[in-house]
Image 1 (spheres, rainbow, N blue to C red):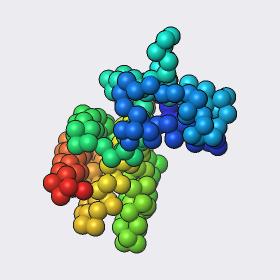
Image 2 (image 1 turned 180 degrees about the vertical axis):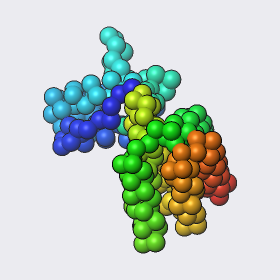
Image 3 (image 1 turned 120 degrees about the vertical axis):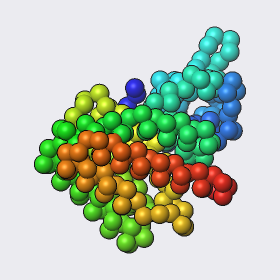
Length: 237
């Protein structure tokens, strides 16, 4: 699984600009990418463009072949477990199928993680979970959707850590990027529900070391999260 791209400055801007062309549909699967045209359009050096192309190649989005030149690879080749790819997908307004896939991934990973957290959490990790929940409540009271998203991410990251499984913790890159995108859609809605009670139920069960209740509470949380997505889908948002 690739790490999230952390490039900044002109190099990072070039990566983001080309990715936006791909995920907006301006450059579709199989379309050629004329390097000279891109260089003129973006106003960057050949070196900056070449380095940006390397990043996008590593993420499975583009490729170059003799006689064919540089082109957009088929979606089946994209590294959809890459945090940036997920983020770009959400920036391009994800389709309902992608949101469903994300929900199914969370349903596979997070309930067992909650069960493990109930068995393995430390006092410090409980404090982190409570702090994230407190921030979520404060952000909700302040009517700050962006802060609600940040607090939600902190809670789920802390829960992954509390599960005590190093490999599952690595899912944070995927889960975090997907959750952030999903949250911006849902919590940005005018009639979004208060997320605190469902998260509190998970924390209470983890704190009580009740593994079955923790898993069940997480399944309930995810069911509510999916119902929010379905509601927005039906509303055409």
